[in-house]
Length: 261
Image (cartoon, rainbow, N blue to C red; front, side):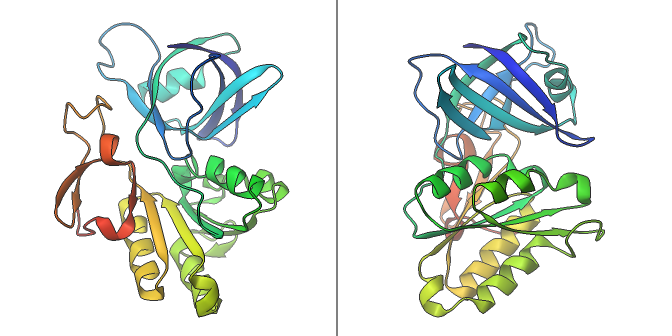
């Protein structure tokens, strides 16, 4: 379907936030689902690119789908050039997303890993669930949307690898320290949801397993078709393999194998 751009915001030198009008009658995406995007006709690039649903909301002016992305290649460069009224070809939403059943939500995002977690944070707060967000990045410009999360009532902690914002170090160290301070009773009600690089997700899985806390992760392997045909997004699971596009991209952390990909 063809979606029309409503606005484009520059969040930092690398990151942009694009709002697209969502057609009437189309179902609402769930947090953690993704859409496949094409910016123009032709065979270059040959495949659509997957983007996590960053936010979705309905209002008097219609429904809006938001995409948060880092400008890294041809498709994202073209999205970054979309002015108001530009048309983007979108398929979806696809995949299995996050759920909201937990009494308390802790979110862990590494850089652009915030993309599929912001919508989850907003819905968790709207449902009255406590929400704690750990944001990490290489530098300050990779730590995004802190004021918006705090305005929605999320408790936010920040770390950067170079120490330019928040605590110096890895975001999983914040998670580990927070869980160590939580009582056993409280940990039983916490659901950790995470998105970021493979090493960060592996650390989240390890920290949560040691603390006896449930964890779900959104993986981000190479994906071409988004429909289970190309097998490009295969991930290792404890008993065989799964496709991120069909069985994920959100998995229980304990379901996956965390050996080096």
